[in-house]
Amino acid sequence: MPDVKKQALLPRGEENGLAAIAADLHKDPRRYRAVIGIVDCKRGAIDYDTDEEQLTVRFRRIEVVLRGDHGAAEQLIRRALEFRTDEAVLPLELEDELEKTFREMEEPTSPEDPDEGKKGGKP
Image (spheres, helix red, strand yellow):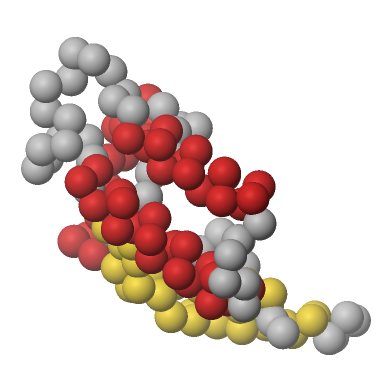
């Protein structure tokens, strides 16, 4: 199975919803954000020494998931993960990690931010 390149290409312009949170990413780079995206494959390469194939993913569209939609996003991730791993019930460590990640995303970044969650504000 081919490996997928870890540094994917992001879209330019209106298709790149991450531009709206660039300042927040810079301010708090370790904070997780939930995103939803559409991808395709830009290129593939083969290492002839190892016969490994590596694909470069290109995001065609990427958007930040709004705080009010985090529950739905968590459900979608769980369903996709269960399908991919063929496990109806995820291991406890993974369940805990997903729950913790989404719980931390729900915490406000700063108590004095009145625009948090509003259009144009931080998602």
